[in-house]
Length: 249
Image (cartoon, rainbow, N blue to C red; front, side):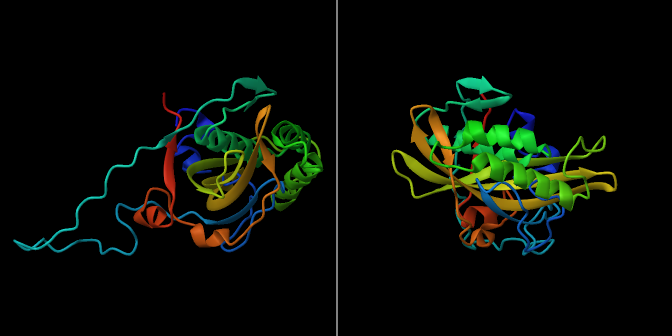
């Protein structure tokens, strides 16, 4: 992915999941964040050359032994840009599956990657459906909660070099209709604080609704997302339904 905030492998890899949605998230604990999307996170696994369940070396294949056919190549979903850039965030995504996933990636990344309550509220006003009342206040409270977990004051600029970043890297869909669907995002959440850099994996659900102004966020419930946690790009991720996406032109 070419844009830093959604680039695969960036930020240390994933950075949603909410990037920071919660700087101090630990295994089995959901990072707090705007209620516009619920998420769960765990410490990111260290990259390995082989799945953890496989031995370091494999025995040579015996002559004549049957081998499993390689899985067919799956083309990543090509993300698209919104047609309007407002306050640093793209909106007005097209009425298509790619448009819905792209909108979800943009909104979740922006909401999860800020420590400024005012900025979070602005993002929510731009991203939320008109029926989603209270989204701006919820987003602001989510940013405040993240700051507190990082040991920062609720207001004012954070110390230099302090930041959070949420980077979605894979997706899957639920409850798809022409005008509404839920986009699940597997993300990497990176927190940068004076004591160092930490990274977590997470899953979040973004429910989007089609409107005359493009896709907009609706409230989304956390429904057993922890079962979908997986290291991006592995066989485990594929088995759990995760699909690749890219914004490469």
